[in-house]
Image (spheres, rainbow, N blue to C red):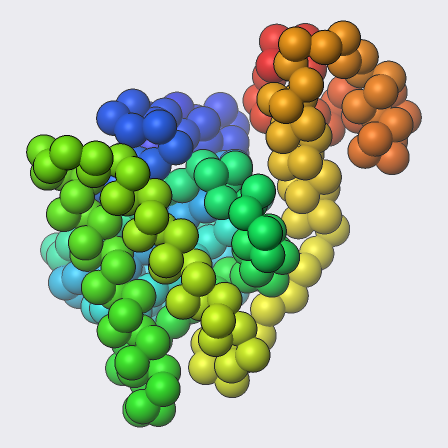
Length: 234
């Protein structure tokens, strides 16, 4: 269920835990075309799931994993029955770790990991990633001490597993491309990070526009389009 949708922009409400939202989805409702600044991971558990990202429509089977980076337009068509694990992650939790930003950048426009791949290496990798996601789900809905810290560590481990096999990503999981939309998303992720780090200083819109390489007015328009609020409100 999309809680907050303004046009095609979804604002992800991280209600239960800082920067992470998990939904064990059993709904039959479709998700209209939308995008958000969170990274999304979907793993069907029962029955397939149809995901459209840009101009590509993919059928995601049980135990496949699809990663949708921030800023990608996507829509989802649900079957009449089934369940799937949906994880939304605040991009900033990961991108400041050395090497992680480059890895996450390489996943655009999406990364799909097939659970039924006949390649032994791919199967072992998929199994490790699936186990990570299932443990994240267990921690999220549990009551164990330090569960938030454990979830963060599992998310990092999830992407470390992918990163250490990055040389095999194209062969195992398909091609990765970048586009102008992602270039802008990356710019504004960096700008938001800069604002957060320098929030006690006098940061002007002129400074940020210069940092992003845009005119002041072009920057203000794109910033509102990206964050759904004005620079001053942010």
